[in-house]
Image (tube, rainbow, N blue to C red; front, side, top):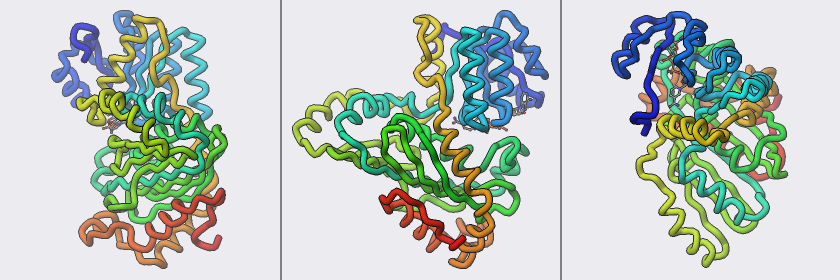
Length: 362
Ligand SMILES: NC(=O)c1ccc[n+]([C@@H]2O[C@H](COP(=O)([O-])OP(=O)(O)OC[C@H]3O[C@@H](n4cnc5c(N)ncnc54)[C@H](O)[C@@H]3O)[C@@H](O)[C@H]2O)c1
């Protein structure tokens, strides 16, 4: 998508082998072991930050000061406070900031712009995500599985994709809280399971469940947004197959054609080419990138983490009482899809009331 528009002029990585791999693959002539030196290279106009999460904020702040436009991976930062600083730094430096997000998907853009206004008042939403991750995944990179560098587990690294879409559909987040625990990953510090209640700026509320402890629970996972005049629905892990139903069948039929036309079959979840092309267009047209911040997904992350901290032990004990395999690997080999634990949590999330009772009697 970027042929002729961009060239990779330099790579920075503290790991020389990783840098050389990237240089060979994309014909980049220069390696900077220290990323600060890359920022002094006047030939570079855009930087792409795809480092561990704790580096997103400091690297963005420094890149903005150096006058570079910034393409940054998800999650935008570790906290909503850091995200806010990044937005302000880019604004005052006059550089563009673009965050990795599934919002680039043309299907999702159609739903946001054309379908959501037809749903009327949103009554309730729920989002259930299962992403299996084993100990080997965490062993491959030392920053993963740590509070200080990954900033959480399944919530910070995996659920953040769908949480960002969810909050975007509903116009942003006022407040979130929830519960989390590490159920099946004894080698890491952070959560592998969480549930939360989110109050959105449109006045609606929704509930979520995310786990990396076990495989996809058939029939459990996906997004539902219930409006007074229709419903949004996706049952696949990354919500690529988002669909809608409207009570007004004629209106639904009228939107169906443009919806099918908007779907780009080339979009298979790798948003990076769309993000990069959008950044180039944003610079040319002097406009904001399509996703110039993703702060509200961090409000969900931080809200659940901070609230759930003091309940993590009780959550684990409660889940253990319902029967847990020894580890994520054991769960997979047993074909365990969450058993009573995930059924109980999914039950809480499916309940549309504006409260999230603790399942474990804290
Ligand atoms: N959008 C996606 O599809 C997708 C997929 C995987 C990861 N990610 C995101 O990409 C980012 C990186 O994840 P990953 O899984 O590729 O991690 P990784 O550990 O495989 O790669 C990170 C790289 O950053 C380098 N690095 C670490 N500290 C550095 C420093 N101070 N200066 C320069 N380089 C440094 C490491 O040496 C490593 O090569 C994360 O934000 C992650 O959430 C996105």
